[in-house]
Image (cartoon, rainbow over all chains, first blue to last red; front, side, top):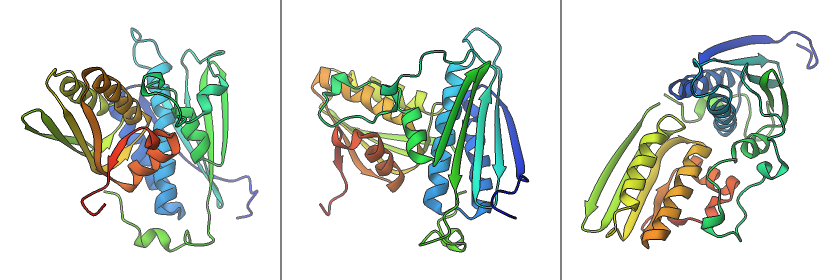
Length: 165
Length: 108
């Protein structure tokens, strides 16, 4: 039970690289996070980060004309944190990750200058406590969210939060 | 987990209520519907109610940016009429909040 204890419970989900399964990945991580005692807001933030990472994988990992590959989601449940790894065996994004992809939309910009994509990684970095991205054979993104037991996000908080369906 | 859309049109104004989840899967339908409305030459208003949207990610942000651009071309007003706390959070984190016309309800 030590916070650096090597043992973590592992929950894995493998799903086809198709958008129709994004909801399944979100629902799975939502269930895991709920069990761990995350607050309602934290659970929703985790779902959003996982949704963004899985969407990136589904949209970019495998070519359009290939058979849909597999996306893997692995949840490592530690006593004090949840580590989620989303990985694929696709083409990776060699050199495509630019610093300007990690910024929000600035208020001074004209609507015509706004891009319709590229916010996913910014959101993941904003919502999670630690993010590590590795790209060689495919992409693996590791995201950590720490359980906050102080303040309103106490052990009992989630039981009175609005439950997801 | 799913998404429903309900469109009510009065003359040149279109009111769309979205309920459920907006992601890369359900977003295709949302984008098609809203872009079709935005491209109608006589449309003057597209109002989107997001109060019952339980999940939305950057796919939704991208859709609204695309629709806002299309509306600018046709001089149609695009506005969000009410939004859930989750959607508001997403708008604020991404910065779209400062670019989008939002009506939070009659009380304001």
